[in-house]
Amino acid sequence: MRVSVITVVLNDPRIGRALDSLFSQETDAEVESIVIDGGSGRETLEVIERHRSRLAVFISEPDGGLYDAMNKGLRYATGDIIGFLNADDRYADRFVLRDVVATFSDPTVEACYGDAVFVTRYRERIIRYWRAGNYRRWKYYLGWMPPHGTFFARRHLYERFGTFNLAYPIAADYELMFRFLFLGNIRVHYIPRILLCMDAGGISNGSLRAILQGNRECWQAWRQHSLTLQGLFVPLTKPLRRLGQLLRRPPTLPEALLSTGSPRLSAVKG
Image 1 (tube, helix red, strand yellow):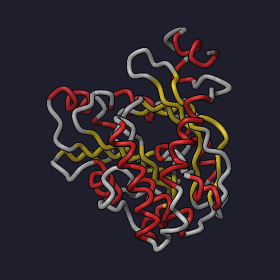
Image 2 (cartoon, rainbow, N blue to C red):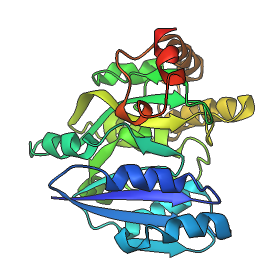
Image 3 (cartoon, rainbow, N blue to C red):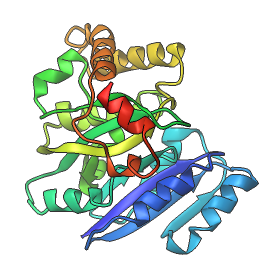
Image 4 (cartoon, rainbow, N blue to C red):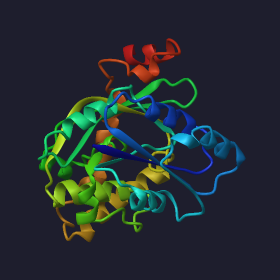
């Protein structure tokens, strides 16, 4: 089995950490690493160059933004399974892809996802625990979605349902997974553990304005698919889910956060 992992980047040296976490994965599967760079400066390109020999595809050219770059990566992906690892994220431990591949050993499973934590950029203190939980279709009415960085899908789903809709500059990941899971009613499996560590911020969480726009775009996704009334409460329920994630603490620390000291541990105890 081949797993394609697409990483998009623009002027973010943290991509080195992301690629380190990818190449440290202990799995028998073939891993195809695809890096799509939007035209970064020297610092980021030097970091990428240190990993260049292990990249299956590296493209560096201007693009139309995050989701346009992801769509470009999808065009190059040849794996049976496709996932995304953002430049400012990293896998929680060495066994993420092993567990993902094991999940897809069941030929009826079409996609899978798991949990994630958000950490502060410098002290790496856990500030948000995104426990996705088992998928139930009705949860979408209550603002549910899985962390996109933990979402892996068979390649044929992108061929069947399409790629990221660029009309959603912030919430295209929500709209795509909504299309796959809620509208497509695919068979999806939940891996009940932390798969991803995400730096706080990002395109959808970096400011109050981005959060509000993202919520509006989520409702627009329902409207686009003629489900205006059904999605009416999504802009209200999504922030409540976010609040719950801020208050919750993970039961264990991810391996990726264990190596450099106590601030991470105090975050979980607090």
